[in-house]
Image (tube, rainbow, N blue to C red; front, side, top):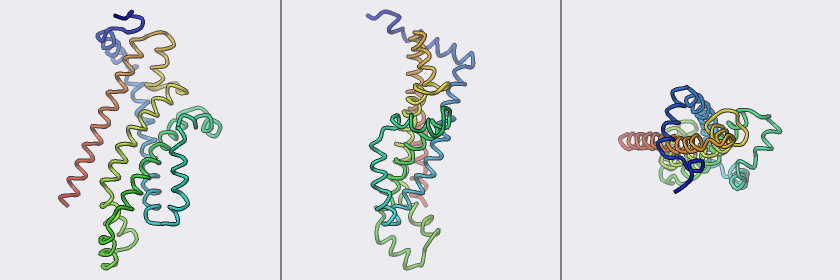
Length: 224
């Protein structure tokens, strides 16, 4: 139905992926993308948890930072690429920071909702037993917020992966996004379609893994 230079058969795409994997090129590109993803994700999770918990525990901090978070959510991450390049130059740091930005906003707002939704009676019991400070945070606040936080972590990972691939298409010299762009430039439709399949498979696997982690944590918390 379609010319081969527009839509190649699935078997050709599969053979291309096998050939790229055998040459080691595919592992290098995937490793580069996942390295940036996990670096930005880890940074964003740490910052997001801290900011979300702080806003949830302090009405003053929430009054100052919540409008800023809502504003930042409306700004597409790709629109910030020129700004970040001016500050940090062209390189992996820009990609990691963009991923961290997406993750921070998502995790912070999910943590805020989780902390704000804690039952007042739980806080009252903690106050009755004089549970304060770090003990309150570890024994009451975060355990009670786990369902909301885990949902935020899962959504943040999916968004981070999509943003990373898009950024690699535009400014990266390595990664799956760059492989897609290179295939487009040399009219290798098999590489482009193979890259698209690879992006979907990796995204699916990442989602399955974090869902498994979520189920494990929630089951452990229920048993505890």
